[in-house]
Image 1 (tube, one colour):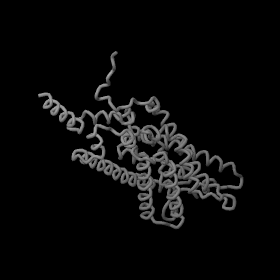
Image 2: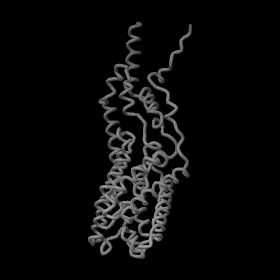
Image 3: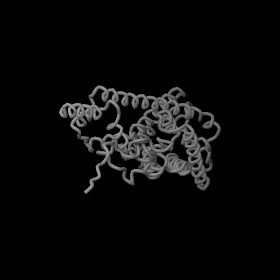
Image 4: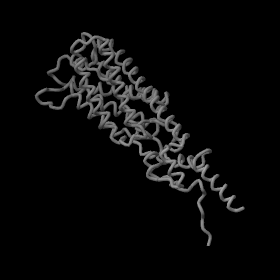
Length: 345
């Protein structure tokens, strides 16, 4: 009777499950999802404060906008990654998760969705007979500084708040959607609650949105004053997103370098397991599991197909660790060969 013996490289390596390998949505589908999600964010973020009656609207506008963002990420975030904000897209580009060409298309789709949301809200305003000045009503939710701020915050103050708030928002998005984060399934709730918190601060200063697409939507029908100040609500979020993206990229590289140094020094937690010729599946799966939200990381992170080891639960990485030169397994094999030879003499 002949027994089939698996090759050494395949020992301990589980084949990828069919559910682990899924085709990435086409760019048209991702752009449609971004436009739809941004429309939801704009309609809720601008519509609630626009039509709010304090006596009959107990839900704060900031919380409504955060819940809308959470709902949009849960609904279509698995298709596009759930950005719905040009600042989030810029942060993903700088962090190395999104290609520049895809990012430009994403921002275009977000602007389309924001414009459609603004048109829908303005159309509703025109149907209300008690509102004589639709443009003036829309201006009440437009972002602004100086005399167009609720408490007349100067440009420098609004600029600082916009940069800081956007940096925090992008940092939360990048951190909670990282593939190694065990709590990444809760990313929509973390991002939505962060948005609600920041909008509560922004409304008191001048409807600071921390989202260039939403700022553009509110300025379209608000007159020349809002359009003249719109540049600030693009420049500041981009700067904040760039800061967060650079910090996250540096942190990720530092973590990778530390892990590589530990492996080279023999201080890796799995080295003891390898010395005993026992690869612990639970440890490896917890470290290499790819159950990401969305298409790889809740973002469109890997743009040209799955990286090795990213879409197959780290199997390629396990195999690489088994046969890589200088690894503990290789050293163990050499030691066994030496003693086998000595024992045969």
